[in-house]
Structures are given as C-alpha cells and as structure tokens.
Image 1: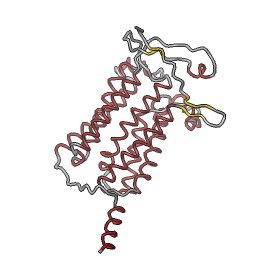
Image 2: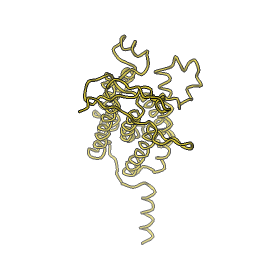
Image 3: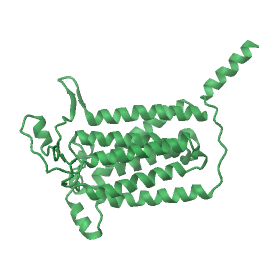
Image 4: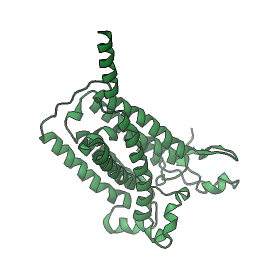
Amino acid sequence: MLDFITWHADPELLSTSFVNIRWYGLMFAIGFLIGYRIEERIFRHEGAPERWLGTLLLWVIGGTIIGARLGHCFFYEWDVYSQNPIRILYIWEGGLASHGGTIGVIIGVLCFSRFTAHRSPLWTFDRLVIPIALVGALIRIGNLMNHEIYGHPTDLPWGFRFITNIQGWMHGADPVYSMPSHPTQIYESAWYLALFGLLMWMYWRRNEEVRPGLIFGTFLTLLFAGRFMIEYLKNNQVEFEHNLQDLIGMNMGQLLSVPFILIGIFFIIRAMRRPRVDIDFPNAFPDEKKDSHSAKNTKK
C-alpha cells in the first residue's frame, strides 16, 4: 500500500498550435454553465423574467474575474504590482483571490438589482449563492490540476506529492516533487460541494427563500468558516503572510474571511427575527404565462 499519492496531472487538457484548453479554465466554464441552468430553473420557478439571466451572468462573470484579479494584486502582492501597475492586466500570468472575487460578485449583484431587477439585492443573493458554491468546488479542482494552493507536509496516507516546478515540467524539464502534502484543494472542494447540497436543500425542500437573507447568510458563514479552518493546513501564498501569522496568528486568507463570517451571521440572525414573506411560485417565465393566456383566448 502506497504511503502517498504522486500527482502527475497535466494542467493542460488540450494544447495545439491553434487552441490551448486548461483544466482550470474548463472548470470555470463548466461551473458557470451549470450555474446558469440552476439559476434558470430558480427564475422560472418564481416567475422572474428570463431576460434577466443573461444580464446577471455578465455582471457575475465580470465581477468574479475583475474582483478576483484586483483582490490578488491588492491583498497579496501590492508591493509588486504597485511598481508596475500595467501588470495588473496580465491576468494570464495567474493570480486570482476568492475574497476579491466575492467582493466583485457583491458589487455586480448590487448593480444588477439597481439597474435591472429593481428588487432588493437580498432577493438576488439568496438565489445566486446556490450555484456559486458549486462553482467554487469546481474551481478548487482546477487548482488541484494546476498543482497549486496545496497544504503542509503530512504523513497521512492520502498525502499528495505535487510537482513544484510545474511550468518547467510542462516544457520538458524533469519533475521536482513536494513532500507528501495535504491536498487542501480537495478538502475545500468537498466542503463547497457539501455547502451547495445544503443550499439546494434549503431552497427546494425547506423554502427558506421566504426568509430574505437566510440562504445568503448561511452561504457566507459556512463557506468562509470552512476556508478559515482549512487555511491552517494550507501553505501561505506569499512571503509576508508568515510575518502576519507571527503577528496576529492568522494569514491573509483567514483575516479576509473573518468579515464575511460576521456579515453572514448578521444576515442569519436578521432573517430569523423577521417575519416570512409571501412568494408566488408560478413555475413559468412571464412570457410563457402570456403565451399560455393568449392560447386559451384563441381556443375560446
């Protein structure tokens, strides 16, 4: 029986002179595709306009990418990017931060609610965070395929030996392996997947959307609480985090998680203290209801 797993995954699924498909980007795309279908079902269930879906998708994708990129640059490597700000645009070099992505999505939802839906942002948040949990799980699988964001050395039998010179190995160099380490990408992916199942259950089985903010608050609290705990097993992403840990006992990922956990708890308490709201579930888009009504009139 092996005492560890030697991880040989190639970050590139397909590489030709015309196209280059990486697992990370594919997981992103699959997540957004499945997320769109889930959101489409939710919107139809509640009779929200179908045309809102495309607008919301654009706000979410834009907020995720821009927020995640700026979050990495400002939170983790501002000393580097401040010297040459144009490099912030070089997204192909890598460097995305989930906390920044979360802030970007929040801003995107606020814009969508203000300019398109004309509803409380909580209405959108409660429905959007359900597929976002699934997207987060898939993105962590992308990190696993990239041999990145793994944990401290471990003697547990499921420890992974990752390729530390991944770019060199992809260009023909001999692989250099890490010590058997915690596959924290899998830990986080499993946590997010469980959260996705919980949120689906809350919406479809418990109808907790009648308590505005409860699903959103549960998402923030549990997602970032899991992130906070798993960070204890994870390697720091940049050097200054070692000094931060020595100073306050937390790295940057944990420090950034605390406000989201507190905000989540606030929304849970707020939702439980307020009365339930009445929601109609026509299970049809507005245009479908109009077409159905027109068909009935024609038959008459």
